[in-house]
Length: 237
Ligand code: SF4
Image (cartoon, rainbow, N blue to C red):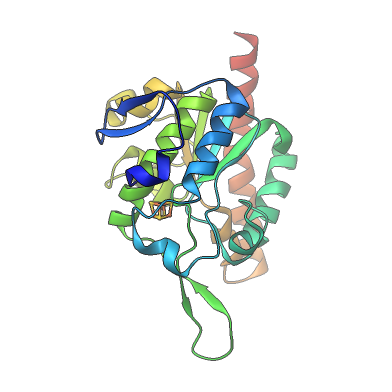
């Protein structure tokens, strides 16, 4: 994140993991608004060059649950909002089944610009997985969102989000639906006491047939039910 992208923010303090200067969290929406505005001009990696716009996180400024996906997709890039495309529809359906109100969560991505390559034929833009260097470059924005929202529960959707926050060796396949031990990610746990990972909803759309899709959707809903239970416990505590 270059200084120019965050100069508009006030009260600079050092971000511990990068030595990057960014605003001290102010109250709720004001801080998120300031972060969102600053992220519009971010040039810390090359992904901004071919994307329409920065797609920053959205949702309740004091959400108890924060979901982190990989990056905006084609529709999110055009609309400027996270999780509004096909994967967002899958997430909406699973949230509903799990009893989680989308209006009460915060949704964001590990990478804030859409990475894509042109299809061999036609005008379609094909999603490309971000490189580790791009995930790393974008992490200060995610950390800043965590500091402001202060969720009780952080949910990593897919391997990019999990590896950004929990380390490159983290395996979603092996550890999905489990609470993450603090030694794995002490900094993240300090910001969100409960951390859990599951698949990205787009993986369900890639299932080879409808039976597999149904099974994967059910497993995803089961993981979100764990999140829902944790949220109820956290509320009652
Ligand atoms: S992907 Fe992230 S780090 Fe790269 S330019 Fe966009 S906002 Fe900045």
